[in-house]
Image (cartoon, rainbow, N blue to C red; front, side, top):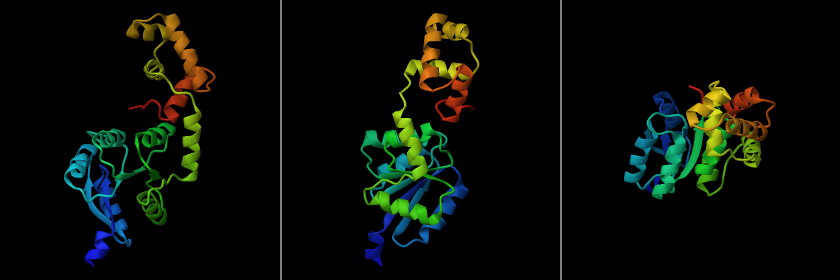
Length: 213
């Protein structure tokens, strides 16, 4: 029995919803070769557990959490050399969520409506050193990686376009000319393959480039 436990894939669940944590603990606890060794309600709490415990093999990580979200936790793990495998398990599948998760180091990306069988398959594949990204999510990731990156200034202006600010208003906030703002907006429209600024704003929200409270 002790030998079997030692060979288990030891999992940490990170999600701010207690019902989700309890459900996943029960679901995975019935699977041979898997062992849930803990759970955390935020990225910061999970980091403390990862620093203190050396026996965690894989993290199931939600993206939207208080204090520290999933992306920030992934980045912190890499900075600190915490090299546990990570699978993102989330309700969100915007292009930017998928792209940023993989860029930050996630080796798998699953939605919370994933079947038990697929979740177990993903855990075993990632633990073995592979990746697990379902086909429809993988195709969106590929499309996102092919698109030209937005600059930090373009993202700043795009957030203001989404809020409905005019070029003149944006220029006033950023202390640049409305002509310069217009050039940035035209670049945004081209990069987002949009017809106008309104469609660019809608596309940015749909893809998760700009969050809306």
